[in-house]
Every structure is written in structure tokens, then in C-alpha cells.
Image 1 (cartoon, rainbow, N blue to C red):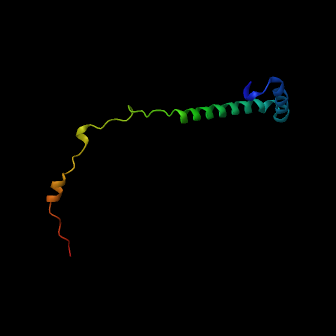
Image 2: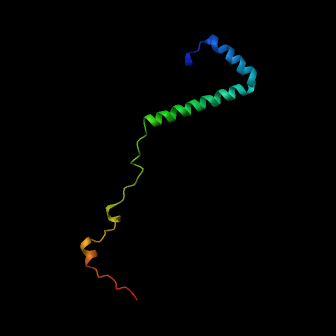
Image 3: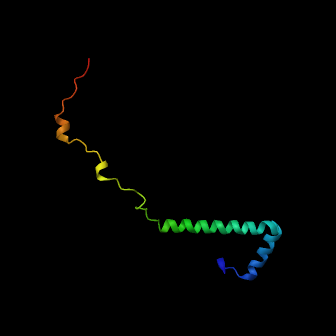
Length: 85
């Protein structure tokens, strides 16, 4: 049984929950608790096993689209502007 409970220990808890919350809200609460546990388990699984980054979705840039930067010697050979006074 879950959490080490036996059926004869769960019956009084279920009866108290039914009396306290009523027959209309009890299924809603069970569904909400189930969704919460499922989301928690999914989050824990993602932490332990991170999903790989999709590489196919990133388009590779063509080699021609990259502009060429001037070389260091070309930059050093250009004359600097004289400061305007």
C-alpha cells in the first residue's frame, strides 16, 4: 500500500474526508492532488535527466553571410583623424 498504510487504516481517513468535504468536492480534490503529484514527478525527472538541446531547430548560417573583419595590419595602417579644434 502507498506510504505504508493498510486498507483498514485508510477507511476511517476516507470516511472523515467524505464527511468533511462532501461527495461533490472529494473527486475534484483527488483529481487536483493527482495532477499535482504527476507534475511534481515530471519536474523531478527533468531535473535528473535534462532534455538535450534540439540542434536541428537552430538554422546554421551560411559561410557567405559572415562579413569579414579587417585584419589588424589594415587597421593599424589607416591614418587616424586629426582632432578638430
